[in-house]
Image: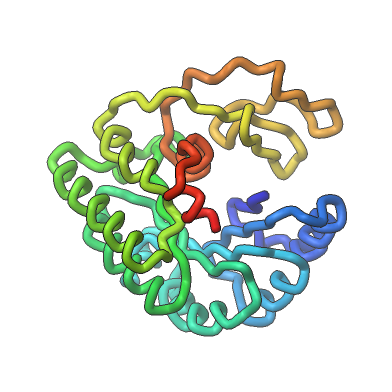
Length: 251
């Protein structure tokens, strides 16, 4: 189960909700994604004690340009200061979440190496303009060759250092996604769902609400979606064939 936003740490009662999740499903693996702006060592300790298994911090640039892109002054420096301490907490994993964009291709390999230096994991996803209608982050055709080179290099680093959570299946298809080729067989609603803050169930965050959580959910009422709009890590990792290399990623 992944808790995301917006920014989940805006909820002062977030630890109480994690505790309720763990009480309802004791063996659940809870991941929380934060932009880091409201995070402190005290808050991280509380999250860990409440039952968060994986703490993820968003970081798209290895410079203070990250502050400008996220409109969060000082957040890059804050993450740099927090990471060496966060990895000493008894989370299962502390992970950087990085979005692949046209403007940060030169930052992706350095970010992967910095995560390893910190003793953290790193996970990659792909920019999608559907959230805000802005296509500026979509990798342009003139940079596709660079993207291919970066994806190849990240796979090599992953094999050597074993700290990149993203599966090869994602890297093998990310170029096709940005080229506009269809990546079929999305299993949203069948293998994962999204629950909004208001309690409405969606196939995924990009699709309309289906019904309120108080109604019975039966995945067998849905046919596979024909949507090919995104290539988020949530989709790519669940669709990835369960081969030996993918099992190694997960453990």
